[in-house]
Amino acid sequence: MRILKTWALSGTRLKTWRIINGLRLSDVTELVDVAQGKLSDLENNNALPSAQTLINFAECTDVDIHWLLMEKSYKGR
Image 1 (cartoon, rainbow, N blue to C red):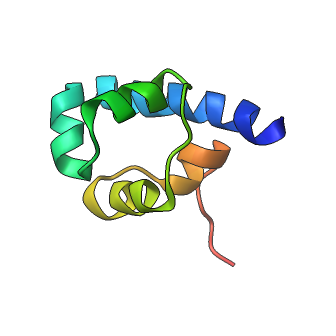
Image 2 (image 1 turned 180 degrees about the vertical axis):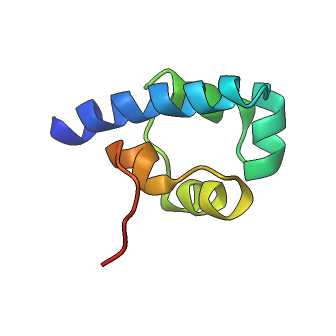
């Protein structure tokens, strides 16, 4: 399934972003308001993010959602 393969890369990018920024799982769970187990599942490619989780990442962190999902930065229209 293409969506799951695409997200598998996204989970890896999410974990990389967290580590590069020196954040623990618990730090990100507080920022994004997601359960620690769910975040771990996302990072390990065992779950897909909800729309609300993606919105929270966009609003509460410097994560570029386009990069997270597609490995590309948003360049506008």
